[in-house]
Structures are given as structure tokens and as C-alpha cells.
Image 1 (cartoon, rainbow over the protein chains, first blue to last red):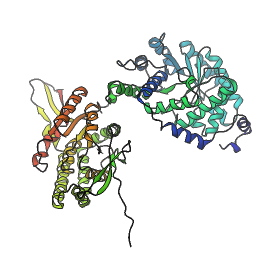
Image 2 (tube, rainbow over the protein chains, first blue to last red):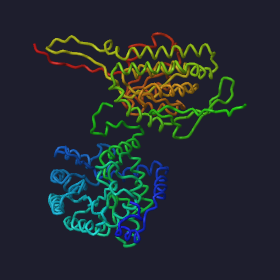
Image 3 (tube, each protein chain N blue to C red):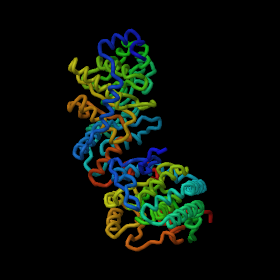
Image 4 (cartoon, chains in turn cyan, green):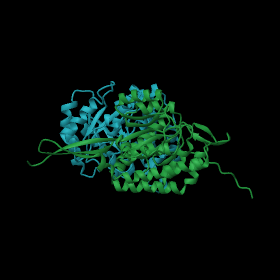
Length: 312
Length: 288
């Protein structure tokens, strides 16, 4: 949706927050992949990334047993090498009580997607009930999806009211607002949706790129647009909002690129798991694999870390 | 009319693509008269790591192909080499050997490809077995490919030696990464171009050029490489065996100190395939 043809409400918003220089963003993020990171910084980055992972399983075939092994992995990603635990496990609402048995009382938090994840297409009443159930079952963090339909038709008030209602339903739980960037289509829309969300959530709540359930997920480009939105919002209001890219980040190298983006856009204040997270499942194995490579000096085989058991 | 002289940039064949070294390093390659011929990539351990990733990606698909199909594809490689045999022979003469000698090596190499193309659906019958056991079991042994095999080519026989090491590994469904002859790397560049058009899935054979002493420690310690096959001198053999013991990989090495007749019939066959497979024995209960 080009800004000129956008609904009046969106054009008014752009007058206020400014639009995104698409080419500039692409060029900026291309540079992040060319940084030379030396050994000490690499180990720092890899360990930091481990502590930022929201270890995720969001599948129809999830069972309490699978969640149990996910929790063990989050607590102890590897049996040697002094690898820190991850920030959180991320599961469906019905799995929260099972996760609670394993990570309750530890440093690892329980995040639960709620609000009819991933589409968000159920009545608000149902979505709020889901949030309350997850929180009362023990979820420390709630990942909600925004109403993309409301956003794309320009009903910003409705979109923000729904987020505000979820904030209220969360109580003490941290909220992560999933914008589902692939369905917003343009960088301008991502910036607009980021601002709309940031204006109704609390300091320390997150905005999050995607559900991981659509074709395109977190990229350095949309991550950068959201980081810059957070920066501009922080400079204007002093309210620090946290960020979580999710989906498609599978390798340690990608994770380091994202951390470079955080460091160079928002600074050290955001380089911790209260302000930045990775929503990922395969990423943790690769992070641990690279840390083991640095520790032992030998390139590692993936089967040492993975639950996957294919012969190769 | 004078034409612009088109010089060639030799590139390594890795993951089905033609790559320069990630380091950007090259070594000057001279022809038999001592004149500059081309800049050949000097691959690093990071290139080796990337080649392992490519081999790991391609391996399972290659192993799952039917034996007959693997044979068809190897035969297709022979066809591609036949068509560019003269060019391949010219690549060998860069080292100073005669044209006749180079053509002889190419002819033997093509025959070796066809030899293994024939073996793909036959080695299992020769290496596998039905075992007599004193219980109510049907007991049989079958082979499985090992996974990723590292190949260290000899300096001499840059085509025949290299292929004699690669072929038995891929015949049974392994994927390989091979370090080509250090003194005569150019024929391996040409071989990569032929592999690319042979229907062999990208990543099954990965060819690197570079300095042996830089890469051998990584060959030895990389845990994803399941076996090392090739030619090495005493120091290299020691380093490889030490690293292989740590990472539990098989080592199948010939001595670089002793002359090897790559043309000999004993350099090919089921025993070479046997060196790079795992055996799996199954006890299947049968009614008494």
C-alpha cells in the first residue's frame, strides 16, 4: 500500500511518525552482514544470544512429553561447556501448566502465545479468555497477535483498543505484540503498526515480528524498521519497548547479525534478554554448536546437539 | 583480426556452485614452460567447513537414490568426460607430462568411472551376506554409506588419482569433499565443470584446492566427516590418525612415500567400496 493511496487515518499517522526509506534500510542491513567479529566478541555474542532465546514449540503435535524435553533443553542447552539457560520457553496455552512443572521457579520464563494464534480471527471475548487462562496457569509472558484486518482497513482505534484490552488481561505478565510483518506488506506499514502498538503497551513490553507460521518471517530488514521505530519512540517519549524477531532465524551467524543491528541501532541498553529476544527453535542448537566449536577447536557434527536423528 | 584474449578464472566446485575461496586468496599456477597460467583458489578451513555443510545437505538424497540411478549418473559423468577429454588432457600437460601420457591418464580415468557405474547395483551382493546362525533367526548383513568422506588426493595423477579415491566413496551413496593435488590443481577445476553437467546432485562431490598443511588439521578434527581416504605422508598420517581418534572417524590412507600405480586394476573394485561403508547386521526372528 503506497503511502499516497493509504486510508486517511494512515496518512495522518505517517505525517506524525514519518515513513521508511526502503532502499536506505536495505543498504543499512546489508552492511551488518559484513562486520568482522573476532573470537572474543563472537563468544560473547553467541552466549548472549543463547540467553535471549525463547525456545519455541508451536505445533499441533505438541505433547506434555515434548514440552518437558523442551523445558530441559531450555534449562540446560548442553551438558558441557557451561552454556547459560535460555530466556524462556514458548508454548501453546494448554501446555503452560505442563511447562510450569519443569521450569517453574527457575530463571527460564514461560511464554505462551494466546489470542487465537496465529490468525487472531476469533471474537475478542474468546481471545481475552485465552489470555486470562494462560496467565492463571502460570504464563509469565503472553505473545498476542494484532488484528491485521483492522489495521489494513484503517481501523486503528479498534486495533489499539484490542491490544489495550489484552494488556489489562495480562496483569503482571509481560506482553509481546506480534505484528505479523509478512501480512503488513510494506516497511511503512510495519513502522505504522509498531507505533500504534507501542503507544498502548507498557514499558518493557515487546513488539514482535511474526508468528513463524507464514511464508516470510523475521528478516534483518523488518527487524531494522522495528528497531528504528523503538528508537524514535524512546527518544520522543522515554518509554523503552523491547523487541523480539521470530521465525526464520536458524543459524548462529544470523543471530549475530541481528545482535549487531541491535547494538548499532539501540545500543548496549537493549543487549539483554529483558529488551531483546529471539523466537526460535533450531537456532539454539546452532548457537551451542558454534560455542562448542570455539571451546574445543573442532568443527562439530549437528547430531551432537539435535534431537533430530537422521543418519547424516 | 585479432581477438580479445579471454582468460579463465578457475573456481572450485562446492555445493553444485563454482566458488572462490571465502578468503579471496589465490596461488599462481604456472604452465610447463614456467609462464603464468591462472590464479587458483587457496581454500581455507572455512571453505572446508562450508563444503562439509554442502555435503551434509546433499548426502541423504544421494544415498536414497536407487543403486541403478546412481549408476546411470556415474555413466553420464563418463560421457561428459569423454566429450571434454582433450581439454582434460591439456590440463594434465601443464605439469610437463607428454600429451600421450596425459591422454592415457584421461582414458583410464573415464574407464574407472564406467567401472564404478557398473558397481553401484552390484557391490551390495558382494559385500552383504546371509549369515548362518544357530537359532530361529534369519540373520543378514547389509551395507550403509558412512556419510561424509574427506578425500586427500595425491600430487601425481591429478585426474586418475583423484577419481580413484572419489568414485568408490560415492558409488555406495557417501558424499565427499576432496582436496585436489596441490601441485596440479587445474585438472580438478575442469573435473568440477564436468561433474556439474553430469546429473550428479550438487554437493555430493565437492572439490577444494589449497595448501594441504592448512587443511589437514581440519580434515582430521571435523566431527561431521566420518572417514578420511587418500594419500598422505608420515606426518600427515599421524595428524590425521590423532584427529580421527578424537572424532571417531575411519582412516583409509595410502603412503605418499611409496610410488602408487594408479593404472593398476587393484586400485579399483569392491574392496575400495568396502573401505567406506558401514555394515549393519539384522537378526530377524523366524518361526521354528
